[in-house]
Each structure stands twice: as structure tokens, then as C-alpha cells.
Image (cartoon, rainbow, N blue to C red; front, top):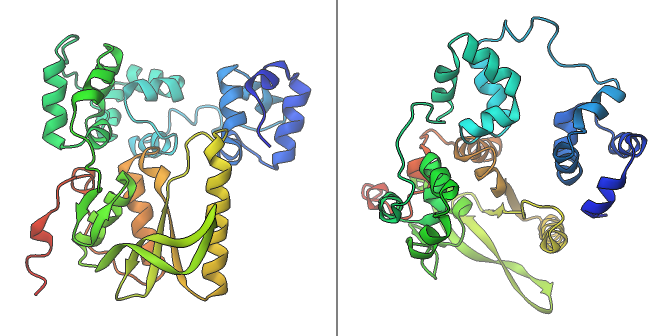
Amino acid sequence: MRVPASVYREWTMDQWCDHVRELGVNSLTEWAASSRSSYNRAATLGLQRQVATRLGWKPKLENGGLKAMTDDEFVQGFREKGVKNLTDMWKSAQHWCELLRREGRLKRVAERLGCGYVLEFHPSDDLEYYLKRCRRVGDFTAWAQLDRNAADAARRNGLMEEVRKHAPKRPPQGYPTSGGFCKSLPELAVARLLEANEIEFVSEVQYPFTFPRGRRHRSKSDFYLTKFGAFVEVWSAPLDDTSPHFEMYLIRRRLKTELCRRLNLRLLHIEGSLLFRPGPEAFLEHVGAVLSDVGIVVNVKIDPWQALNPHYAHEVTSNRD
């Protein structure tokens, strides 16, 4: 059940604690994963750590443990928090950043995260500058993921809407791939990984069942892996679980999953929202793990720029004959 923001604001600390107990979680991380909306509201109100203290949740690190953490451990920790830029690093864990700055390690950790700690000048009023960077990628949505520091600068300087208005966008029919057109950026990243590993696929393949939505019609999968007889769904849930579309998404997901189970159809589930948070690297690891778990070999790794390339990479299929 969705709870309005006004109700959250009126809750007492006891009500917050009762809510979190009902979720059956034992840490802030588990709370955020279980109920994104209530955790975000608590964080906005600055109450999440008070709730944790009241519930007796112990910090993961003993006294002095933070100083003993290696760069690798900090990098992993920031990735789990889903940081996308230097601002995210400070917002998500200011005490970590303060320690790293004092010890002269902040720049090194930020660079390993791809957060661009080395400052790059982005003009405050040059729309053409941002459009040129966006055209280099070839798609507005992909650019916002791949060139995050420039995109953040455009947003800060009030230019993002103008960039969005004039930047290249996804063609109406979708992004072209070797198996057909893809309609979303997560689907494009999956297609690029399949292409790189020479896994044959076809996009938009109909399921052998009708799917009720208004009037009954044939439902389509995002991909069909021809050699493995597997349907693939890239579930791109609304990022806000209070969205009016979220409930319909859940219904559609349950129906497709149940119908495939009843008909003994092989269905692979990929969580498309991971592309945007934590980010492309984590998303590609997730896709590779889903494929590997069912025996589909993924030997070739690709980077985010290759994954979100909106143009069809002809060289992928040039040697398949």
C-alpha cells in the first residue's frame, strides 16, 4: 500500500520503528532494498539513522575500522551505494569522504569509480558545447549516463532542458541491433553484450499465449535467444514505487512469469533499472551473471561506451559466416 508523503511527515519515531519492524529488515541497506519509498522519505527527513539506533542496529565497522579500510573496500562500498559522481559520494557517505580527503586518497578512489575527480571545465552558458558532447554519443539518454560530469554541469547551469530539446534521441522504431530494434537503453545494453559474445537473438518475439490488457492480444518478449530456446525480459520498473504505473508493471510481470511457468517456457529475468542505479558497469555484470547461471557462456566483456552505443556495430557480425 502506498503511503502519501504527508503521512510520513506526521509519523512519530515509534510509528517509524513499527513500520520498519514490519518489513523484517535488519540494516539500513536492507530497509532501502525492501521499501525504497519509506527509506527515501526517512532519509529526506533525516530520521533513518535515528530509527536504526532505536532498533539497535549496530554499525558494520567497529571503532577504528573505517581507517583500516582499503581503497578496494571503499570503491566497493561506494558502488553498493549507487554513486554516480563526486557529489553522490559526499551525499551518501560524508564521513568516508572526509577521511579519504584527510589521508590524500579521495582523488584515487573517485577516479577508480569513474567519478571524474580531476576537474574538467564545463562552461555555464554554452549550449552548443553540451550538444556537441551529446552528438558524439548519438543519444541524449545514453549521453546522460556516459558523460555524467558534463550532464551534471548542464543540469546545474539550467541548460539540461534545452539540451534535451535539441539533442539526438532514440529513433521512433528503436535502437538498431543485429537482432532487430530495441526500445529502451537497458535493452540496448543487453543486445550489445549478446552481439559481442555472438549469441544470436531476435527482438520483439511474440509469446505463444495471449496477454490480457484491455482487450486480449499477443504479448511480446524483449528478446528470444534462438540457440537456447529462451525468452528474455528486461524489466524496467518505474524508479518510484509510488508511481501509478508501478502497480500495472507488477501485474504484467506476474502474469508473464506465471504463464511461462505453466507452459514450461524458459524465461530469463533481467532488472533493467540497475542500468541507471547503480550504473552501467553493475548492470552489465548482472546481465552476464543471469546468462551464466543458465549455462550461456559470456566470455567477452564490454564497457559502458560499447554497451550504450546507439549505432549498430557492423563489425560484430562480420565474421559470423
